[in-house]
Image (cartoon, rainbow, N blue to C red; front, side, top):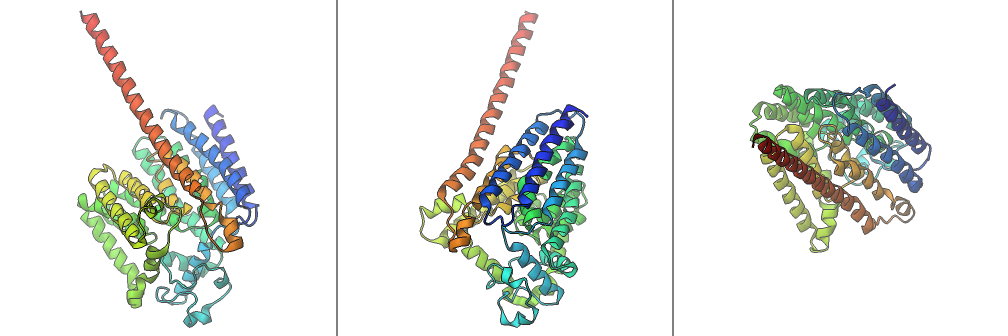
Length: 440
């Protein structure tokens, strides 16, 4: 076995050991500090593995079997664990139960007496049972498929694992098309945030990436109709990929957009009877939710109107999407930039929102986001106190560490890149002077 494979095998086993220990902690909402220590150890191993892979040239032996094996093993140990960091998966299963029974989930909050005949053991586990669902139609179809098999977190996590296969295959094909080492898949597949949030807590955000990245692959291969269908599915599981629409409009990808529009109409059709209630839950979320956002808290120091702050951030998000549409050269680059801008400008930045960005790291390695995907775990620190008091309070220092760390790494990377350019220019000047001396 080569040195490259031995190093990655050791680092991969550290990540597996850490995730195994996390799976045995019990209630992570209570044992948050041990969770963060283990998460930090896994992230340190992940960063070391990412550095090891990125520093190597393309013409080296591949460790893809080790990367896939260790990543799959880490997923396997988390699949049976209870989702104690978040109750979201139980809301997915409740929505899926309604859809599977032919009930439109958009007009009815789980607490609605009209749903009394469908209530079961899921109801006590739901958060915000007074608010109708915020999840779009493709997500509802997936929830229903999982709930029809079994109304358990494991059934949903297995659904995620199945969909992730599309994402992994698309990433490998895109890496090969760019003549980039396949080992870069590790930047996604070994990321501890992906492991904890997708296969520990079962968050739906992975499904958006599982549809988005294959759609970008098909777009690059000029299969625009199929790309449009998958792009619509990405948007209809998590609305955020819709930020890419201006980029496609600027490229006049009319077939892709038309296919996406038709797909959206098909998926929305069964739920249109909800009328204006179709967006009730989403409007409540947009008006009232805020968490772990540096931009929101900075504006909160300057402005008293929450609506004004949200409008400013929404306007900045639209401006960012338009700017990216004008400047980004590739579809994957535009997607990475749009999803990153969303994280910086959204009033709500839960840790699992980072998963789609991490899915694009193999194609667009970014040490800032690699670091941020670990630092954002700190937002779980107040969880035990919230369990005891019912009051959520995120200390300001956590935001400074998370976002300060992100921008510090970005600044260091920019300075390093500028220094390397200067060195190359200096070397070029010296080489030219030597040539002139020889000719003289």
